[in-house]
Amino acid sequence: MALAADAARSGDVDTLDRAIVAGVPVNASTPRGDSLLMLAAYHGHVEAVRALLARGADPNQTDVKGQTPLSGVAFKGLIAIADLLVSGGARVDASGADRRTPLMMAAAFNRVAMVEWLLAHGASAEACDVGGLRAIDVASAMGAVDVVAVLSR
Image (cartoon, rainbow, N blue to C red; front, side):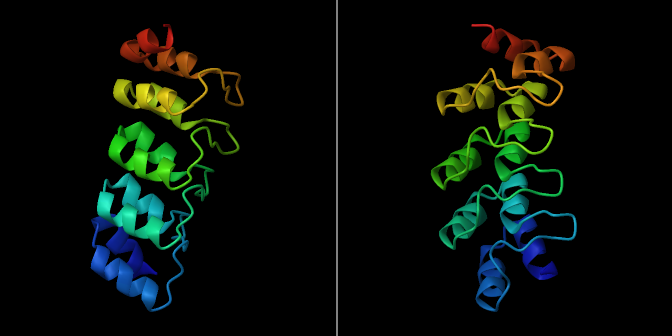
């Protein structure tokens, strides 16, 4: 599993494919709960994400914090990967126990383009986390003024 995780982190599609063919489950996770897809997505490796999805990786598999790969890329603003994940079946409003959605993650880090992309793909601006905060509230608390302007429209 360690070799597959390293390959996912670095975007080494050939090694990743060989590891899966050799028996590493496509939805295997590291001890921290990061799936191969989460690692590839978070580190921005489009081709590795595409390969994992083609092999049946679950785009809604959560880590130990309940976050999905889409949440990870939302906070980084990686729209190309978000598009692959959603095309592969990722739920745009998926959340963990804290009920923080990908939109909230993008809003917190002032990722305007990602916020607009998520909204265009059906994300709910009205969803609330466990504290009752919506994406606009999270953006306001984090000083993400550009996102606040988008969400105020």
